[in-house]
Image 1 (cartoon, one colour):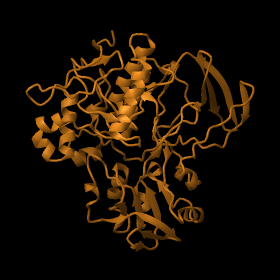
Image 2 (cartoon, helix red, strand yellow; image 1 turned 180 degrees about the vertical axis):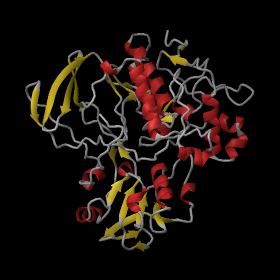
Image 3 (cartoon, rainbow, N blue to C red; image 1 turned 135 degrees about the vertical axis):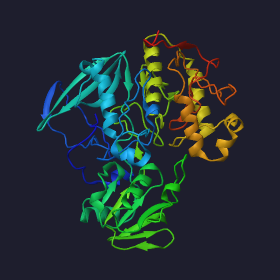
Image 4 (cartoon, rainbow, N blue to C red; image 1 turned 90 degrees about the vertical axis):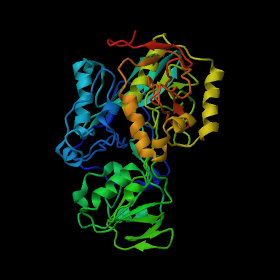
Length: 458
C-alpha cells in the first residue's frame, strides 16, 4: 500500500543506521489466531507520498501511456512556461488522474483492497497463503486468504537508502528534520535562505539542487564527485553557477560538513540525500533480496523456484507503464495457460548469463547494441540525451498493434533496419533489472508472438 499524495508532512528520519544497513523495512509477525483485532503496529511501512506540489514528470507523456489508453493532453501552467503549450511533460496530479480513471472506468474498484498491507506470503501445499493487515486509528485488523498464484507488483521506490556517514545520526537527533531523503522533499520554500548540502548524482538530486538555487543560500553544495551519475544524462545538470560540486561527504561534526578532499562547509542547515532506495520484500520470506535486487527471476518476471509467483515492475525502467503492461500481459498469459516456459535449466542459465554479462549488482542500463551505433551514427555521436529522445520517439510513434509474448524466450537481438533506422514493433532497448534486461522481441525473433487486436488479447 502506498499513498499517492499526503496532506501530512513526511516523517522525520528516525533510524539512519537501519536505512544505511538496509534493514529498516522489517517483517511483522501475524497473530496466531486469525481473523484478529490487535493494537495498531508502530512498524513504519514507508507508505508516505513521494511527491511535492509542483512536481512534473521527467518522462514524456506518450512514453507513459498504456496501449489503447492515450495520456490526457492537459499541460500545467508551469510546464507551458518552461516548454510551451505542447509540452510533453505532465504534472503528477495528471498522472494520478490517468491511473485512477483506468480503475474507475473499467470497474476495477471492486477488485482492489485499499488501505491494506500485505504482511506475509507463504506457499502452503498447492496454495499461497497471504496474511493481510488493515490499519485503523487504534487497532489493526488481520486476516488471511489463499490464492493459486501471486503477482508481486509493490514497486521498489519506497524505502530510502541513506549511506552511513560519521556524525550524521547525531545531527539528526539534535536537529530533527535536518537530514532527509529526496523522497521526503516537499518543495523549495522550507529551504529559503538555508545552507543546503545535497548528496547524490542522479535525477532526484539534480532536480532538487537546481530547484533550490532560486531560494537557498548560494551556492547549493552538491556531492556528486565520487557518485555514479545518471547513465543517460551524466552530471550536466549540476553545471550551474548556483551549484558547487563537492567530493564525497566523509563526516559531519555538529553542523560542519567535511568532504573527501579536505574541503568543508560550515553551518549546514539541511542535508538532502538523493541516494536511491532499498529494494525490500518483508512479506516474502522465501525470496531474499541480494545486492539490492530480486534474484532468481526469469526475464525479471517468473520466480525460478515456483512459476506461480511472478513479478511485475521488477525492473529499473524509464518506460514504466509500458514495461509494466508488457510484463503483466506475459504473466497473465502464463497463468492462463496460454504461454509456455522453457525448462528450469534454461531459465536458470538465462539469469547466469545476465549476471556474467552485466554483473549482479543493482542498477539499470540501456543495452546499446552495436547496430544502434551503426544505424544512428549522428545521434550516437551527439550523446545519450539525443539518442534517448530519438529512440523514444521511434518507439512511441508506432501503431498500437503491438505484439504480445506468449513464451518466455523473448529474444535478445536488436531490431532489424527498415531503411529509416529501426523496425520498432518492440522495444529497441533493454530496461535493466538488478542484473539484466527485459528484451521485447521484434517480429521474427525467437518466441511465439501473437498479434494484439484493438479489443485486447486474443
